[in-house]
Image (cartoon, rainbow, N blue to C red):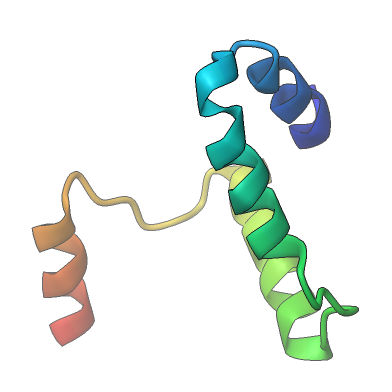
Length: 71
């Protein structure tokens, strides 16, 4: 299932009283959206490859993440 299909399905489960929050968030992340630059495209491809292969560093909590950044 694609991320877009998943988002549509999840949207159907959002209660009406929370839809204003969803709309505001979506408007915020789409304002001024431009074509991604070369570095962003490379980062997207890297994440796609990590998702495909499962070859990535994983953390159980934020402390593990912060500790790894100190190394």
